[in-house]
Image (cartoon, rainbow, N blue to C red; front, side):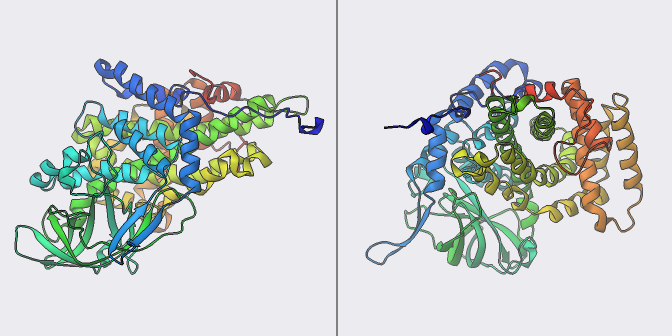
Length: 546
């Protein structure tokens, strides 16, 4: 029998049963901007279906189950035969199946494909981020495979399929396939040219046998992998199928699964190749050039995934404070809490707006847009992923002790938040890549300046930030040591220009005043008090459009 002390009061209801897509006004507006009008209604409908699923109690429970029951490595069967399989909880397969059926690996061949897929990826990551790894790499493998038209013709229909089948069998017999990646080796890390995995040619067109050890092989349950290895002609890209065409298992000896900080529902492994059959992709010695399209696409997914984590954290914080009373009123109405929430909402909206703009550039696919992507993708990957952890940590604090408890979901978001900053090259790698673009590809800087120039004259703080950035770019003496600061400014100027053009005045004003105007402290919740913060917070509320 419950006593009076067990009566529950002043606790927010769970944030369930809402449309994750429709309640995110920044995302809805970005989809409207970057989607061809003739398909917009259909795209909004499919994203609404996905958004309602992501916000449902059932799917949220699947996410929790997948994390509470992480994958297990099965190296041998009961008789001692090597099988090298990864066993997942059924919830993992349900999540991945829904994501594939929603087209989250299908962007390259349909109208508006990158925007609709990026928006769906942003929505679905809020339900569970772990299955984003195979989704991202399967999507991103397509441009690398196109270096070999025959391979692309064989594999692309499988990778863009909307059918998920978990069984390991020859990919040609499956209605759809997933891809992973193995570039990193323990002695090289981000320096992939230090790879020592050897590739020896054998009889047959572009066929090789690989021998080596991959320190990080992501999503080892997939049907195929793109890997780098040293062929006679130098570092080369290869396709390694998990199961060979005759039904036998390729040599793919899983050594262990990584015990990770977060992303626990997903498997990351170490793998040994020992006479492993592989098919060359592209020319010998041009492995980095071949795989770079995959790297760029996954880097954009890192920004999209971080934007998703930020959005979910902000939604939880706004929802909680909107239902929690303290000191004589609702928390959300307290001036200092409103300042914190508005500051977090600005970071979230800026990340979403930038990520969808870059997805739109993939769909437009002109010389100018490709040049913009060359500079903007590593800059966005650097900055958006860097902002994710402090945003999630501050949102957790908005829930107080409730946020520190596992059941709130915020600890899972916090553990996940550093991942995208590390994945596909950590911060220094991204900053150095921006420097390479600036020094070797002047058309990339021109495209960036044209993009931010579209907002010139609309806000004096943005104009001054552009001018200061040009001054920085004119002096490249000792630039590597200050590369992070330069890339940060590039990302902030780009975000500011997009918000000035497209966001409500209250959002653009607050962003420019704080991020570009210098009127901002070192912690969230230090926005100028004269701004229209209530409008910024109201816009971020997850009840919108639900």
